[in-house]
Structure formats: structure tokens, C-alpha cells
Image (cartoon, rainbow over all chains, first blue to last red; front, top):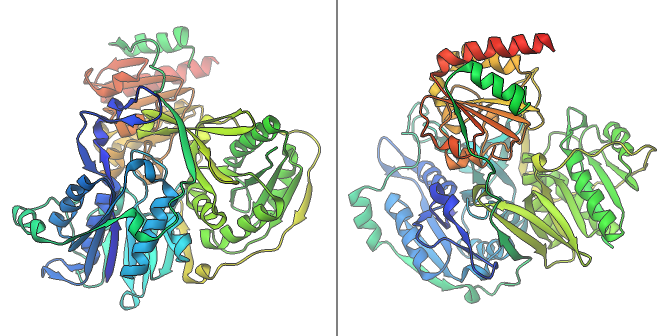
Length: 277
Length: 326
């Protein structure tokens, strides 16, 4: 099937505690931090590749398109997805200040209208904004069904429907959606048997996590096409729906960590100092 | 003047307590702007839940008995219609997985701003500002809506549960609206593990285990006795869930649940940034770990440097003895 995977670059998630507020308090700066693909989007790329291949035979079954919004440098993020095995990229140039949930969703809708994918597969949230909203918003704008926080997907009826296991507070909720649809993925979609496409044998076990790009993949990615567009080219309403007039750092934790060596000492401190037990 | 609509979350045909954190925000916004708040009870058992919801001081409780299992496409049209008819400025629900799934879809239907997972709100010159944790809790952004309506998810661990207000709100049935997208989703089922322990997001004490526990059996044999001695809820790190020691719904972190209990005991959890995002709001944090360099020390108040397999049975016995003393 034809799958569109939106990807966003984020500052290194493992160093998120190093982000700072700009001097005027109006923006977040991540100077000195490396840009990385949003982890959930990387899982979505992996899941799309798994849906679109017969793994043991190394056969390709469909097209995986990746797209990103942001400054021209997000081409690098797209190349990383192309190196994993995606087929084609679309870059929509925009400044970060132009983008919010609603504008990104409208831009993605414009792409979907043009490319007509069978499925939009994307991360459930970006780990910078942590909003967890673009997929749901896009589904509504398209009038498509959705399944969020997917930990497993399997296609049936010759690719017309998809059964999705959703990680929810109280367990795993299963939905069956008729394509085209929007599916947002959670961490465990990249477990060894999270994705079943009917062509790859059901007992096939993938490696845990998203695949690394091979050297061959990296070389091939350089030749794969990336269409370049500007946000203004899409003909969408670019009014943002929310504003962030101020950012602030969380207060530093008061008091330092008290190290103890014995259970008795810990219990004594919890009982008499912290009054926690 | 901003009127607020609370979208209730129901479970097993009754009210889920998560709803009451959104009621707290609704009360704050209504009081701060001179508006009123109403509650929409929606889903199977809506009528039954409305009786409970009527106790919290809402002007009205609307009832939409939508049958079958929860799917956003079935709920969003009714939420949007009730919002439009009532002229609400804020629509809110708890940012549980229910709220996170449903609210952005409602916002898109209304052309409204979606403000996810807020930890506080303040009213500034009649305008509501919402504080949101971002970057795994390492930054707070203050957001405001540019639109007439704001759709707001409330982080459960950061808002008190509303208290009963006395009296009973009037209830009113509303028409159920539909959306063609709903015909293309089918609710197949939900698999839940029932537990007699307190809910993770509501417990006063949480005992969480990490990869250092090494197996599902050790979670049972070594961690669970401490969990039960403390009367706690059990949680886990991503590593422990990924390794298959416990189910995914116990995961605490940026992905998974955010908790802020009075006491958090992290056993064999090194403390990746994504885990800290889900628990660093806890009042007292205890780490039990062999490695005193583990990053959990950045947020821990007390750090027992010990082999957990030796320390936990002893800690369990001592906690039991203290509880027995009362």
C-alpha cells in the first residue's frame, strides 16, 4: 500500500534537560544539541517499512513516502528515513514559528489530498512539544477514521482494513479501521511481532526497535528524490490556533539526594525525617 | 465570561475519577471569568454516571447515552454539537488516553485550539493561560488560544480531584450527533488486567521496578511484597515493560503514565530522562540501586545504595512491622 509518514526533527531527546529559554522568554533554544528524528516518527517509518515488505524474501510491496515541515535542513531528517528504506521524500519549507498543531495538520491534509495514500502512519507525539494531537487533528480534517497509540497493526481483507491494538490506560483496546485511515504509533509497535502484513510470514520476528540504515541504504538515499515545497505553495490557511507568550524552566529540585547504606537508615529517615511512611 | 464544558470519562458504566480533575479546572476557569460550567456524561452508562456527576456543582449535566465501546469518531460529533449550542469557551477532559484521543478530534471539528496535558491555568485579564510541560517535563510553555474556543486536556497528577459541592445539578438528555467516519471504525474489544491495588495515577504510594529486577518472576516474588506492604500501586520503567516483565499499562514516563504520589520508590531503575518525566513531581522519591551514579539520583531525596535482592525483603518486613504498629 501507499503509506505517508510525517517525520519531525527534535533536539536530542536524551539531553532534553539541556534546553533553555531564550533571553526574551518567548522561545525555547536547544543550542549545542544535536537534531534527531522524533523517536515515535522513527518507529512509524519502521512500521511502514514492515507493512510494505515481505521480509524474508526482501520483496517490496508498496511505496513509503516521508514528509517533513521545517527549515531546509530537515532534508537531513528525511534522508535518514530514506536511508532506512523509505522511497521518496517531501519537504515543506516553513519556519518553526509558523507551525502549530493546526497548521501542520492542514499542511498534511493538503499533501494527502495530492498524494492519496492508503494510510498515514505517524508518531503519537513529538517529544519536544509533547502535544500528541496532530494525528487526531489530521484524521478529523480528512474525515478519516483513526487509531491512536498503536502497539500492533495487522492488515486484512487484501489491505482494505487494519486491526490495531491501542495502548490505553486500562490495557489494550482493539479497533478495526477501514482504510484510508490515520494511525499513530506508540513505542511497542517496533516489538518483533508488532506489525503483520499478511505477506511476511506470521511467525517472522523482527529485531527490536527501528532498523539502522545500512551503508548501501545511505548511498541509495542520496539518489532518492525529495520534492521541495514551501508552506505558502499549499494554499492552506496558515493561521495558528494557539500562541505561547512565555516559556519557563521548571524550578530546580530543592535539597540534594541523601545516600544511605542500610535499610534501617532508610526506614528511619523516611519515618522521622520525610514522614513518608 | 467563559463557560466551560467538561467531557466526562466513563468506565464500566459509571464515572471514572479522572473526570474530577477536569471539573477542578472547569471550576477555576468559571470562577475566574465569571462563567458557569456544565458536564457532558457520554457513553454507555451515561445516565447512571450523571447521577454521580450531578454532585459537583455544575449548572447542568447533559446526558448522551452513546452505546458500544468507545471510539472517538462516535463521541466527537456530540461533544462538538453540545459545545456549539452552549456557546462554551473552554471544553475540557482529563488527559488520560481517552482525553488525549478524543479532544484533538473535537478541537478540529470546532476549528478550536487544542491545548494538551496542562499542569496549571491562570486567568489574566479575562484571558486563560495554560501551563504545559514540554520536552519531557524539562520546559514549561504558557499557552493561550487564538480561537474562540479552547479544547484543554488536564494532567491528572497536577490537579486535585473536585470535592462534592452539595445539591444536585439538573440533568438533560441531548441529541446524539453522528459522523460518517464512525462507520469505518469498529470497536473489537478491550483487554484489561484487573488489579486489586490502587490505580497507578491515583495512589498515594507508587513502587516501581526496573530492568535490574531481571524477570517477571522477580517482579512477583521480590517487588510485589513491598508494593502490597506499602498499600501502593505498582509501576515499571520502559525497560522492564519492553523486557516483558510486566504489562505496558504499568509504564511510567513521558510515554505511559505520569504520576505524582506522596511517596515514589524506584527499585532498580536507572532513571532515563523519559522515566523522570513521568515521576519527578512525586513528593518524596526513594531510589534503591546498586549504582550510586545512576541518573535517578538527580531527582531522588533518598538513595539506598544496595543490592535490591538483599534490600527489598528486609525493607518489606520493616514496612510491614511499622504498618502493624500503626
